[in-house]
Image (cartoon, rainbow, N blue to C red; front, side, top):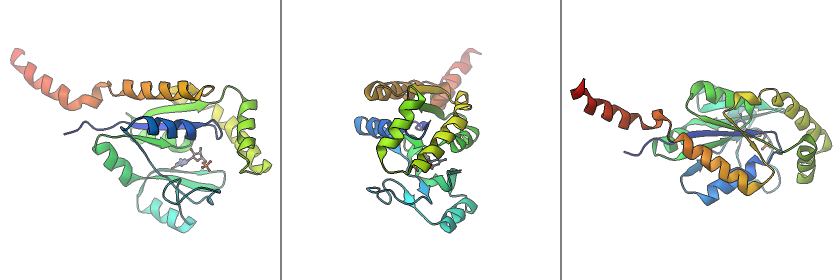
Length: 207
Ligand code: 5GP
């Protein structure tokens, strides 16, 4: 039976470039699966149902919460976002490493429920660069950009709750570093619980 996959949380200030990093690491490696979130936010231009997100009504989202369909969820700048449970569980069971690209409140719920998950936070090199990246998307009003900058300020106080910090000033370097962190986490003893149990059994005769 395949070893279970690792659960990886990638968070970062909105505009830090985590989406680009995650997209690239998935394109370059075949052992990753990306969880598609459910959200009540309106689709942006070019976003596709079931690819970018599952876009749902507030009522449908609240049903998913009460039915226990979500691994975690959060309200972010006025909208709900959450991770559907079934896909994550199936993929991990089949040995895939599952990446959740989610914000901080959700990340903390994952950390509590799945203590072995690897939590990575992505930051741009400085605040001006963050604002520049948010503005250059051109998809959000200045009011929304400012809300996201305020949110980034609030989040910056809690980054030390993550396991790793990646500074995104060079995309290729960042992707390599993320891949290395994930590879390393496969060597945590609890990832090889089956092997350890068997070695323990084999050693019993020497006890
Ligand atoms: P955006 O509206 O820019 O697509 O996403 C806003 C924030 O919500 C981002 O920080 C994104 O990572 C986060 N997010 C996306 N999906 C989820 C999710 O399923 N759960 C949580 N907690 N946050 C999410």
